[in-house]
Length: 281
Image (cartoon, rainbow, N blue to C red; front, side, top):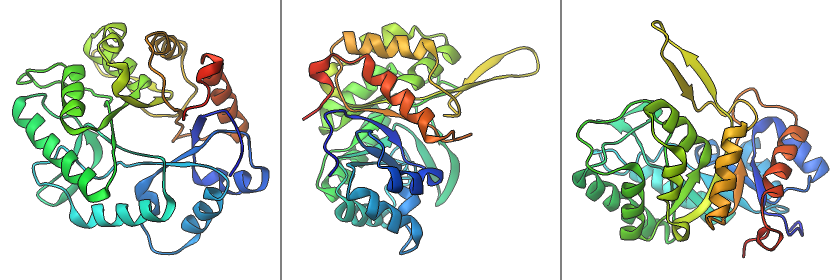
């Protein structure tokens, strides 16, 4: 295992597999999308096995659809457990979203209504998942582009209540806070102030893009395709000042740059941390 006191990680993507193995860059850990390694055999699993010999891993899922009224896909859950048992990730996470209906999967992480009924459903699915996996999972706050009129909770209250009820933790995606706040007219600083520090188990930082539609309306889109913007860095600094300390990840999924760019973002994220908080447990 690579000996380092630094625990700011980066997302591991296919273009960097060989570079990581050959150069063993000084980053704290790597996060992968769980479903990219669901296949049996092949080079992806081989690379991950070799990288795991040196670095801690985190599994970040995008397909469990915890908010779906269809219930949990047992086959998906079974494969996820096999991969967790094989690679022993120190964090396992999913999203506050749904993407499956009547057995059909949709290519997006769709928002859920924040109501008591959905809270009960989501809590059941988190409990089922944690019981089957035998471990705590983290739930990421979404980037969203619409809101439901029927919602009776704020997003932060829904997340906090969910985690208190299930023992799960929050994956606080600071970029998603900024994107959703811009799109809906929320106050992003007030959003962060409503997050209980003791419930946060991981922090994500990423870049986004903007899209302007006919009529002039502009939305921010969570594309993970560029550097973290200054507004998101400022929110990250606020989170730290609030006492939110957790492993930090740089996400970059589109227009993937060379590894040096990712490492520079990780070093910048580390520079915000008090020295005594650079390592986590």
